[in-house]
Image (cartoon, rainbow, N blue to C red):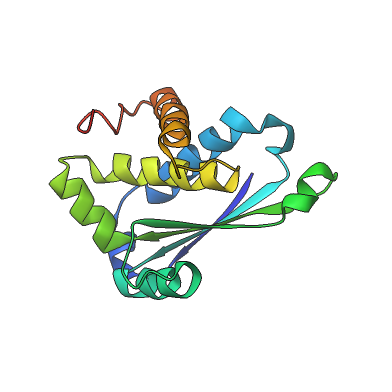
Length: 158
């Protein structure tokens, strides 16, 4: 899978191993669910700030506030063809993720990995709009993260 990472907010640049962490999480999520196009999918990741993600959240979701991760679907019709296609775009906000990691006493890198997996699963059609789909999505996330050595990110909630 081709993964294009753009760093728009300088605080992200200070993190060692960030590119590897992102690629590992994204590939694990895609391989878990969609092995048939793993070599054709392209994914764009934007690492940005609360201000930038707030603008995107307001424009595309009607919510004028920052959030940790946003996912924007790519070319679903191209998935069945024999060519490369854009799975989608994932946008992450440094400040929100950092605040959540501190409040939840989580490792920042593990939290980023979780949000990458979460974002990719949205691009693959998962959602959490009700209790049943949320439980299903959480279980898939937990299993993917376990496969890359990260403990259950929901253990502080349940």
